Image 1 (cartoon, protein in one colour):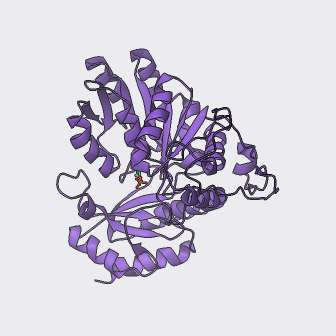
Image 2: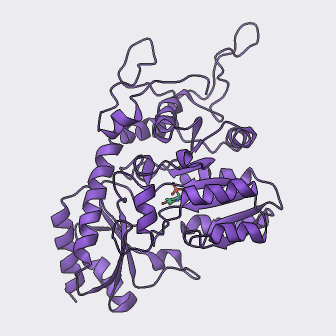
Image 3: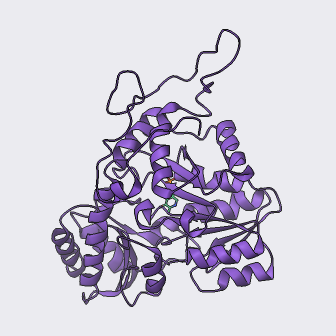
Length: 386
Ligand SMILES: *Cc1c(COP(=O)(O)O)cnc(C)c1O
């Protein structure tokens, strides 16, 4: 990045320090950086663009603060905002070439799985879906046939499968594959994939980074600013998949409370998962923080400060009971998406549709920052009241 804004260190942020150390980057000494709504920038008299700014389809100074903060949080060499999480994720795949081999998880964000199945394959990518959360499966797949890129999502939607980033990094390095990780659910406060060896980390900034269900945005950050990264940067500029400057400013506002929101969501999710295990209407609670969860040991190694704010429950009585339960909650709002301050409940199979690997008795829960006891009580009455 040409200009860099200074922020508090990651540890200061992780301790909850507000981002009041954002360097005022304008001559007015404003505490909060200004929003640049301009689409275009003045050329110098001698026909140069010394400001480095030309046109806002490529970049906008308003992005600098949230991008620098993400770099700091992910210990990244560079970071870029995108117009959505999907725009960020697909930029990685669009930067590949026809014929390139890709390995992606069987359990992953459904819209991206769909995109890989359709547009990804149409553009000539050879996509293999592998149980990346099972030890050795990625290595086996790479042994079978090399790949250019391995994509992980951990914890993976909506079963919260945990993939071992460090182990998979090793396999990728041995086989010359790049590794990219969708870390939306982990947030930069629980896992830093780049420090574990991943090449690229992706976030749907729509979720925890913004945290208030009022901005669609995405981000990528890289461990090394290399040729592949520059290809992604160029692709963003030429495809114009950039957020509006006001959205970027609103995203920064959300990121300033990331630590507080994620800490609260993690604590409540852990407690709710433990409580719900004893509910007679529930046959399984899926949460990486539970000792008997399949990926718990890897999660303990890979996640710090908590196991995330997302859990799923499988209810007795099949899809009818699941849908009826979601219909009877008051505090939990029936909506898709995750990572906002308000708790959401969703019958996941209904939104994923035909061919989904998600069990039809599963409810996905995004734990917000409401009182945890109130959340439990609301869910208990909804589960019982049939
Ligand atoms: C929401 C989400 C995405 C897509 O992000 P958008 O901002 O909705 O485009 C990708 N991955 C995960 C894990 C998500 O939750």
